Image 1 (spheres, rainbow, N blue to C red):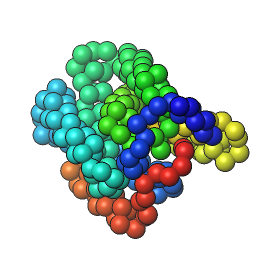
Image 2: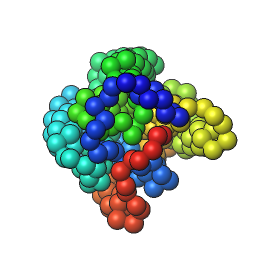
Image 3: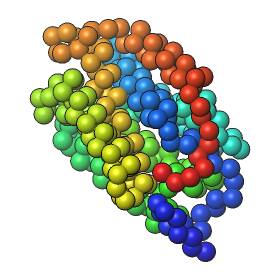
Length: 261
């Protein structure tokens, strides 16, 4: 059975349950950027400040990610706290995994970005090939959720590598990198309101680009002044970001998705 929507084609997708993800609003993007920035400072706090290294930190965060994804799939409807805790888990493990690939394995930022881009595109292709849509409102059953969270994990890891590459290798620095990604997100927002480009495609582009924005913002907060940062404590920065995110969840409405993105 095929049902054509305005953003994606629906093909036999187990979409009989309740939506398990939030409606995409301005509040969603504010919380998402905060979560990605928290993922950068939190991941660095464990891998660097606690001296656990990228490998052991990645193993720990992968375990946390698996636990939260299991909880997210188990709930019967959208639960904001569970959903955003899972997002934080993806962005922290994305931070340490990217750093492990780029630095410990010696792939470099270009190599890491290339590999992760292929993994992300492969995940999206397999998702669409299997279920017929990658639209967010279709996230109602375990099969779609597994693809959704695998895609998010790849996007968060790619975003970390892309942010580091832009700030370091490209020489834009943290402020320049933040301005670049903010500009790109602004262009996507303009396309959202003023063009007929697929809303699903625009959503995933914006979702990917919020991660490098968070990466450079997080590095700007905690990297040494000599490296262009503010040299704030990673633990203090993470605590403030977590508090701000909690306030956003209390003050900004969080409802289950009801239409395409």
